[in-house]
Image 1 (cartoon, helix red, strand yellow):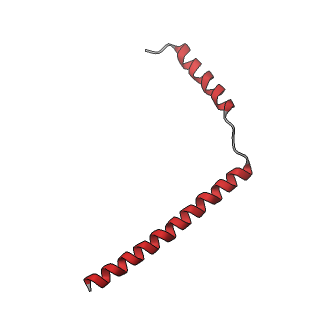
Image 2: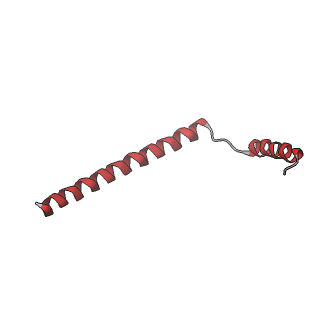
Image 3: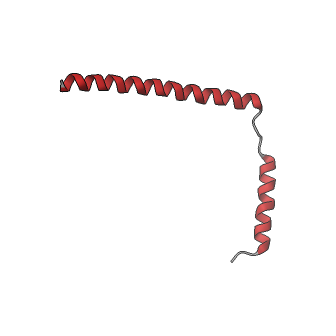
Length: 63
């Protein structure tokens, strides 16, 4: 069983660690968001193209 002091120490350490975090600025967040959206879009296009090609090949093979 944990002591109550251990719980208090945990939260004090938690606050201390959160203060050390270097939070990204607005520009960096927007840039990272744009990169993620672009990669998602391009991945979707590639997957759509591959699916279309394989579907076409399958229809040609099966008649």
